[in-house]
Length: 172
Image (cartoon, rainbow, N blue to C red; front, side):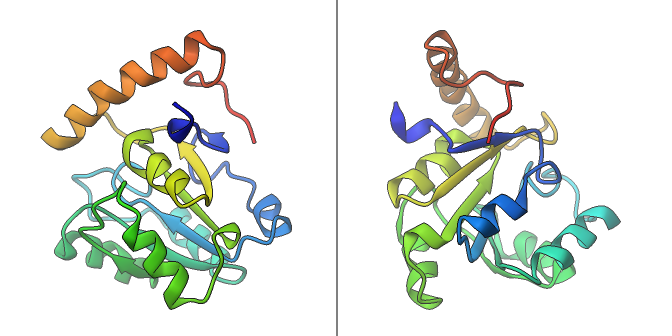
């Protein structure tokens, strides 16, 4: 079960303490896209998210790592002016390792921020980077994500019973 436990759990990407991450010597923030930055059915980005990303780019390398298509991911990444990797096949480790190799970063210099423990958190924990879980923005999701959520909800119930991770009990 430890692969599903995030290091940090926050309500959304706006409530994360990025100064703490900077103090931890995090150099690269890897963001999931769907239900983390925006909902799946939205190609628009709120001005406050654009401002957040503009601010983050001053202190961090910022990359979107998404299981979505190139067409979808590129639209959002271009609006945010960040690099991206689509069709990432998270939780597989190779794209996390690809980022480390491309930017000459060790695993302790990276953090993944996402809304799913089955893909984002499990993938990040596999390569031993800082993992940050946020609540999903919306409950509308793709069919494959709905399947993942069924498995995720079972794991979250187990973690909640053990007082390890409870939805809405933010930490980090």
